[in-house]
Image 1 (cartoon, rainbow, N blue to C red):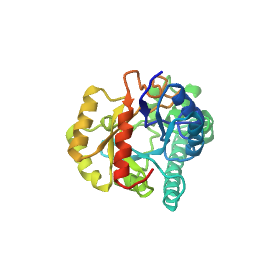
Image 2: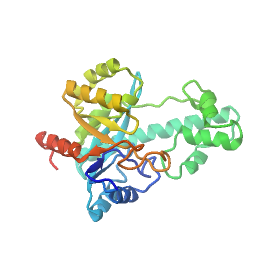
Image 3: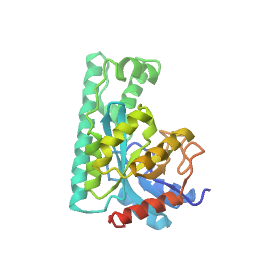
Image 4: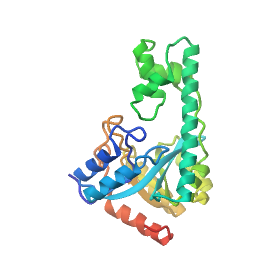
Length: 291
């Protein structure tokens, strides 16, 4: 059990995690975490259930979500933290998230069409069944191709059909980083850039990107993350200091889809201490964003 630690980046079955929102909170409490945020992709659907469970468990809960955005170096992800429960602004955010989910559906349908045109008997419905209620994506189409015997493994499925140069590849239609930040800020959230060093950008390029997007209202960088090594953390801390940003951290827990990542522990070395949450909350209070 770990104490005086937090996790501000987790996923549940409301998006692409395997645990229910309630179970994510139960596991966080069992692990001894003081604070847990649920940050599912493009949805707020699991927040009420998780918040209710957090009250029962006596653990501090932060309402959140994660939005992907397009950059020249791949997808950048942005976390909205402390999303209010109900307001006209949150309803606008939910509408915007619904539009993002619709674009994902259209992409998946297009992938299914391309695979059928190549002679494979696959459908979106089959991929959705494999997803088991979670976000449908290319990994599920890769699994279908494996089940058909069309490829030997998922790597071949992506290399030949589903990857960027694949025969059935369909690009994602994503908002810009500025649009993603604005969506979350207008809803009243504190906005952090998730795992910045996973972006396929040099530190110089990341610096240039931050120069462009910080004016949109970016509040923080997720320096502490399961996929960040000590050098990545140091670079994020230096960038945060240069741009006057706060620091956040979390495991990016998904349950079974990422079996080597545990709540609050990442891959074993991650520990995000309670003082990170306290500093973020103090910053948020100074900004007049409330509780």
